[in-house]
Length: 253
Ligand SMILES: [Zn+2]
Ligand SMILES: [Zn+2]
Image (cartoon, rainbow, N blue to C red; front, top):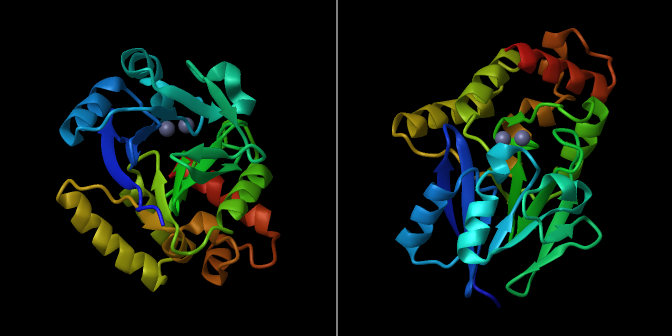
């Protein structure tokens, strides 16, 4: 059995996260917003970059692609459906093609709505969700509607509970404050927020989470929660309608 991958969190820009994923002689960076912090992390660990993975086309996830590719010769892997918008793309992937990393089978989940080509890479039980699923939150609907995002999130919810969630931004504390407006009596959210505040007070990252914890505390995965429905006055509404209302309220939060 292969050893587990080694993951290094790389803070970028003001609140982005890139991730180094090391397996054998291979090292991938997920969503390099910019090159310098990624290069510094590689130097610190003594790792050589072989792959650049992008979850979606936004510049704060691809801004470091070309500089890193030029310097290291790393192969750029991203959503085939968005090939024209991924700088330096070498290998377009989708759900059917999947991907292989150091001989490991990597699942590629197509999760459109934040962008129409958005994908999540699942490597060795670690899901890199970009701006689709955040900790206690979800991405804005720039290129899709509530139905599309709900379908995408529902797909992510089929991942095993112990799947570690690595998302694209440190939005957790603000997301948690919003979650408490919808479910002030959710003990799991309250307990998590106490922990998140402590972690952030120390300047540390809240990633990763797990899918199990997200299902208990992320309001965007909980449109069927009786407390959320009651607070929205939507006890009998369809799941997607409740989800859409949660997303609309977060946009104004
Ligand atoms: Zn984005
Ligand atoms: Zn982003």
